[in-house]
Image 1 (cartoon, one colour):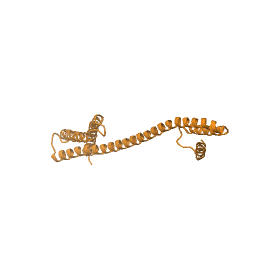
Image 2 (image 1 turned 180 degrees about the vertical axis):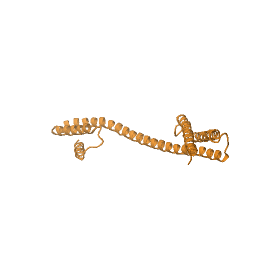
Image 3 (image 1 turned 45 degrees about the vertical axis):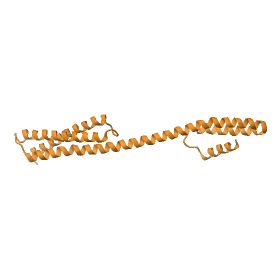
Image 4 (image 1 turned 135 degrees about the horizontal axis):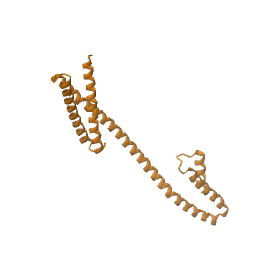
Length: 194
């Protein structure tokens, strides 16, 4: 390849980079205005149209540059058609690839956010239920203790120890996701005694 051929390749690469940079700034502008999940079809049409316009303008600048500098004010129609076709297709392809990666990323982020929201809602329901049950259980246990103290005073100590074991278990396992089988069994036994 001649020096002029390498110059043509390098200038073509430079113009392609410029076209892609302009097209990506166009895409970033519209993504900021219309993020994924809002106006998707409109945004894609606008980005596509911008890609075509930037490709056409970039190809015209490239052909004009080579017509003036390389071909000494000459005009080569096949070169102009080739460059225009390439300059329009490259940004469109990059736009499509960028949009597909953007949609994939947005879809993954949305799915993770939904799963996290579902998990947080389930934890909140569990905590609310646990907080409602704890005072209710204590109220019932104290009522049962009062009744036991009247009917069987000798069983009061075992009752209080079992109640203490239950609340000790609750305090020790609070905030933990798991408890050992031994801890669960001891708490269940104490609960049955109460």
